[in-house]
Image (cartoon, rainbow, N blue to C red; front, side, top):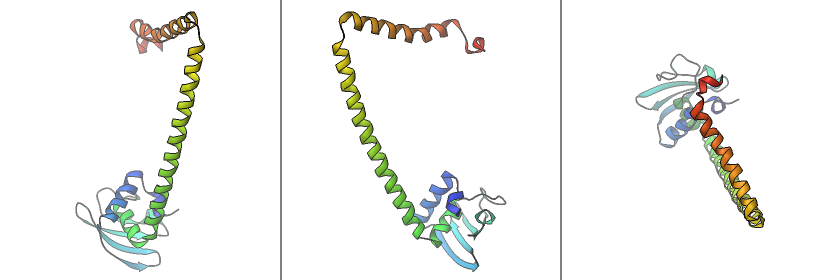
Length: 157
């Protein structure tokens, strides 16, 4: 599991933003899987990234200092070191958007089909059948409204 997989949602997306906005000031490799870097945030923060054990990475920002937390500064530095990851992220986001758009199209199509079915069904009913369905629905809805006038939530337990 790489560092990005261990970041919280906020750290992940804020780190991407920091990387894209050029907040990584510098970095250097200092050992096998170890990098030291500086990322500009509210201040300049020093990060030691341990690629092999991301939770052992350190950052002197208030959020992560002394904790095994993956902060936005670590994410930004990671992306600067491994810029191919940002391409993978962008591709995943594009794929997600395409899948979401397709799901929305399918949903809209299903809703149009359902609306036609409902209209056809309602149009097939007599006035008496319509009245009966409407009355039953209004009574069902009224039940909850009237019940709340008589009972508090505490009384139900």
